[in-house]
Length: 484
Ligand code: SAH
Ligand code: F3S
Image (cartoon, rainbow, N blue to C red):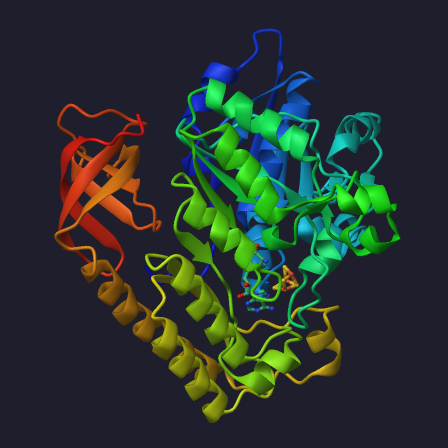
């Protein structure tokens, strides 16, 4: 429930990748990902690029010819985790001298050449927009040189690469639709590590979804740092839209239209999206959710703080009042909508009153779910340069605990509202706790577990909910839903 770090470990997943091995491929790639879902998706793109270079993936570090770690810079702890992994690789490299090690993703972008100096074991440093250059960089490395490419691109979206789904359960998949972020929240490193915002051609998005549907995938999550800001006008940066021709502007596709296209073309596929930014969210998107049964009634709507002065210091472009109004408006259009938040406690200058405002806002929304963090100063961000990280660690810790406790209470309040109802669940896998039970999610993104009976992975099932915890619903299958 109170997931404080969004760390995803590639190693524990991806059994399916053995079937994707190519016989003619002779080299072995070990790829591990940390951080956001975008990184997971990027690793699948990297695996696809390297598949053509003769690499099959492996789960065994010791047998790898190439080890890649896709890294996260969002908080200091994320970077520490990766540095510890590098120590582990180093130990293996001492035995397996031909093994090459590369750092991908946000830490590569942030630290650039410094990596080669500081971490002597790294052969390759590749930023998030340079993965297509990997074959060239690997050639450099094989000739004994270090290789670095961390140039951020204005166009790169990887829309032309079909990702190898490494971690997939075969039921739900992620499709990237935007890259980068233009919002410049003062605490956030993403605009520096992922560059300016650009959107992918809807045609290539729909083609990728078609491929997933052909492979029997049932649920697609559209992915971006800021999906509501999606805007396709023939290519180019979001910020240059106003400079585009009249024709390009008139025929542009925004996020609500993209959702409409996806949900209409694939009526049996469930759609989700993440992440939404309150300042960029339009009610058109919510109207699409109301219109299409196959778009899930769930929005991840990070707020970061409930205090107006902190929101201002964070350069979030809305007040607490505007955020509440947005929530009210959304609920008016879709009353069953579920919300989750990202919250940062202990940002620069946060007073006890600011913290109380955060708790009050949470009380107002009563989020279904939350991702809560103590502020971690990031070098290079505006807050890192200009503001004092002045909330003592103990105070951050205590406030974080209060926020987590309140979220748990609200989570339970929300799950209790589902008791006695019959809800459609997409089966995504076997429950971790009980091999005789399926787990899946309802439209509100709440995990539902129930006895397997004769139902199968990928089925849409109507489940009668009869028990709950603060994060999970329990029930019994009633029948197939009409979506199968
Ligand atoms: N739009 C993004 C948000 C990026 S980071 C997305 O797609 O999820 C995810 C969350 O990490 C943020 O919403 C914020 O709550 C948290 N975060 C970002 N920078 C942080 C920092 N310096 N310290 C603590 N938490 C941070
Ligand atoms: Fe970061 Fe704010 Fe963008 S949190 S990803 S700069 S919306």
